[in-house]
Length: 243
Image (cartoon, rainbow, N blue to C red):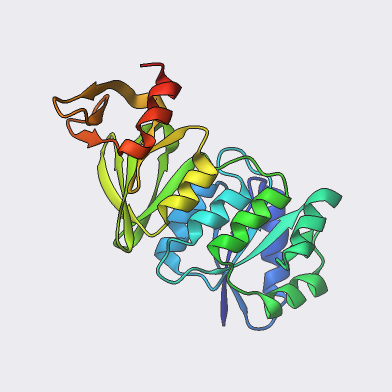
């Protein structure tokens, strides 16, 4: 059986999809969620094969939620559901991403389930850009069998170390597998590179200091660590903060 999770902020839409799934042999409804955050929690716990994911939802929208699903050890396939929006539809088709137009028809749903595939992080990033989706507002981390989303404003810095990147935030730290370069490209308006392995949240900068040997370091509010600044990036950093 194909285990399916429905995610839509509108109850009638969830009910309709549930009724359609009941008519499709080989499909099993395992859960329903009304928000992106709830979807992440259920997906981590229920391990669905496919998520039917509404594109437009308050809070975490469908595209950002899909990106966060990628942190799961076994990410589900994703099929987006959307009201008619030609711009978004063109983006889905260009990126070869599965989608269904509302109101969803049973034959279309059955066909989409048969072709459902997992989406890669780069594919979802390109989709977000093509569809004009807002930049993500959270970073997702996996803790054992759970997924937690961290608001960007709570993140102090990212620090790369070989395969993983440490996310230091107001509540502690976690590891993610996203490369620092990709994070910088996407979040560069809010985060600043100060070293080849460190990206800091500009909003948390408390001060920039210089030692007797002329080396700079950054202090962040809520963080005791002094973060070294590379000589190559010092000028750009000082210009940005007018030190």
